[in-house]
Amino acid sequence: MRSIRTLAYATALCIATSGSAMAEKPFEGVELKMLGIGDTSVTRLAPIVGEFEALTGAKVQIDMLPYPGLVDKIIIEASSDSPSYQLLWVDSPWVGMLGEAGALVDLTDFAKRDAAEIKLDDIIPIQLQENTWQGQLLAFPASGMTWLNQYRADLFENTEEQAAFKAKYGYDLAAPTTWDQYRDIAEFFTRKRGANAGGKPLENDLYGVSQSYSRVQGAITHDYFPFMRSFGGDYWDPATGLCAMTGEPHIKAAEYMKSLIPFNPPDYLGLMWDIQSGYMERGEAAQAAYWSVRSVRLTNPAEAKLAEIGKAGFAANPTDGGKAEPTYTGALSFAINAKVSDKEKEAAWAFIKWSTSEELMRRFANEGNGVSQFRKAILSDPGLQQKYPYYKVLLDSQMNAKRRIFHPFYQDVEETFGVELNKFMAGETATAEEALTTACNAVNSRLKMFPKETLLRWIDDVPAKVLAD
Image (cartoon, rainbow, N blue to C red; front, side, top):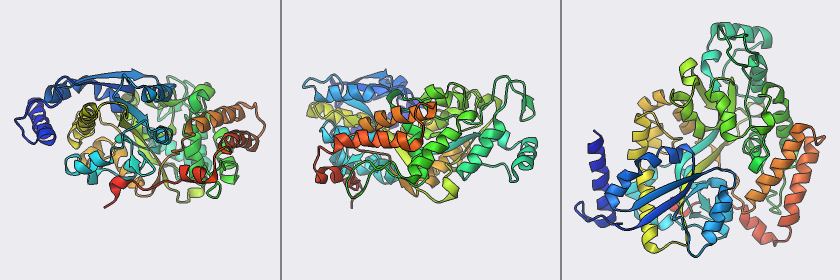
């Protein structure tokens, strides 16, 4: 079966790149290096790049660096006249600063030229929009994300837990639709080692929730910004282009995050990314509002103990009072360094097409190693929805969605708010309003040196040209 798949990939790629299935390897002698990260969009791919090499003749090397500091390395690479990396792993909030710097190739023409081959219509539109700057498609989704609720379905479905919860709170235990419910559930399931949960004694402490509070590269903002949006807030003043995260929704979101601290692990001030999600993966947290990029691990026994001892459930994230708010999305993507040669650009684009193809994405999913999907055909597949319950949540929740922050000053915003919010959570700053005002003032002190028309352009989410008819 594997040889049949490889033959199919080879035939399709040769036709796309040379017009003949019998063509010579089109990129013989080309060397591609990717500056990446140990995310599933990369780790699933790295072991099989030899297949792409066999198809095209290109040589591929993937270097995986830690997330903190990666964007700085990309900026250095993109400013070099002799870059070491042709392919770049990009988190979607970075497209503004990389786009304004001219660091990435605009993939619009490539994508339109090869629209049928890449099945462009199959990609959820917001996932393409996530990767744009001023309408240019600067990266291509390799893992499409939403911020969603992940919970221990085995505990939520336990009849004893359901009866105890209803007796205490007066309503049925279920995936929460409001943040008040989310906090009730967090309180209810916070238990010490040896206590019962789901009818069994706990081998470790069980925490009601696991959220990010670390200030390292603004990790806390990766949770705070989605919370803020779900309370009805936004980043910028549409009239001035300046930071406006000091209003009631912003304050309520910060105060709410602080109210969850008693139900978080004791090392909450250091929680970020894989450290945070590790509690869910080990079954040591009852729920976590987090990025779907880690959701696939929760159903894989090779990656998560929870898949052995219990069962993961997934739902759209709650909102303030259950009011409808757009789903908070993100994308982890592959981009091409603008400084590389035309031949390298074509080879890099061929790699992106191969690595994000429906065929490869479906193969990963069938093998139990799926990524957080961005293709409608895969997310809507009934068999795969059964295998990955969060696929339906991803598909349905992105019908009404709004992208993450994409500002050229994103890194400054992330780090500044990361420090100030972390200080508020630690009790070093008295109020949420003080923390947010300090952070906003710091950001605005730098933004005010730019003309108003520039500031307004930077917050304008110009529709992706690749989506235009």
